[in-house]
Image 1 (tube, rainbow over the protein chains, first blue to last red):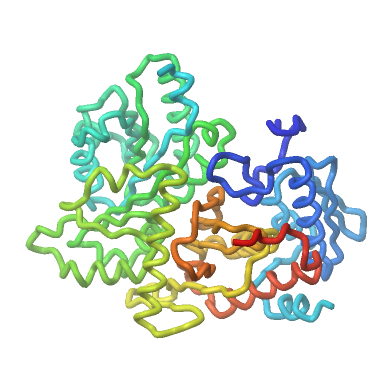
Image 2 (cartoon, rainbow over the protein chains, first blue to last red):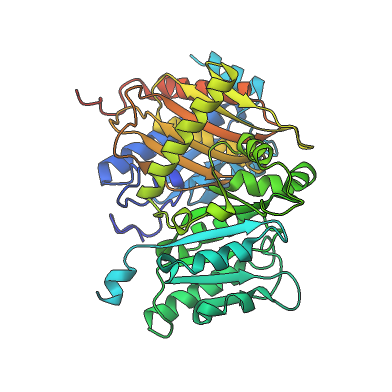
Length: 108
Length: 359
């Protein structure tokens, strides 16, 4: 359970680490946590767009990844996003792939 | 001080690894004689039927646990977790002497990553223990050859925070300076010490803030040294003269301010696809909207919780990321980083985070 908001389960990925002394995280108060989650979702969707996959959030506790054919996968941590997306689409998502980078660069 | 108060901060764990016969136990035995290490519990991992090393460590036998099942990289992950949990609960019940540190000595074949990953992702352990550092022994007699021939040795050195060079006093020892130079090229961000000069302080680093200040200094020195050596402005890199010539370290110097969301997404995606070829990432980042630098630190697919540093070490405020990779193109990694960083501006807009305060 998240000790800050009381929600059951929370993303324990390093980008949203539990707020402790000396740790950098935006998982601090409700507003900053929600804003970061919204930004993360927008950015992930921009990256997933070429494969027509979509990421949504469920109740601030889970992510829901869906394909155009209605296939859905639910997971709790951002750590699972890329393995799930790869399993769903049967492709590898490589941030060093020149075509992928080209598409991101040309994005308006 | 009550048990509850003492247990409130996570107990630091030192992971000691190195090739078979590279002097891990000898080093540990000597360091444990230091009063500062007097309250350390030790987990010894033995490959084979009969463990011998624990006989050498009988001075603190109350707190020595011998893991019997062999290779740490596959079979023993659960056993490490069980042993740590057992130590933790026995300490809480006062059944064993109080310990304020755990040293895990692994078998020589182990890649340190699985043990690190087990500790950090275990739902119970991660609240009670934290990884202080990875200490790797390399012996001056066989170390050079092992690095040339064995990928396991390269991985161990790549994951190290401290590299201890042992057996330099033996007749068969190869040129120590040459070995140090090679190790330095392989992992410029680690501290390199000769075993005879190793002190308990090399182990006694704080698990969070203190360590981060250390690696900030080390990483900066590494970047400056390699930049001075190559005269390269954008990123400096060093190729290696061992059989795994594809392993190299390099650093990115980034002028733009970094969007935290984009950086997290980028590094997560990079490590998902190429984590087994990224031995080490260490970085000091100038995050958009933050006055103070943020330090990140990863070994293969594992990234430690990012650390909010107390201050910039110099007036430059320049982000720097040190990578040790196997067969990945530094230029492509740099290009990918910038594409992601700019993407966040396109997708999220320029003013998503609070502006940096004046002064």
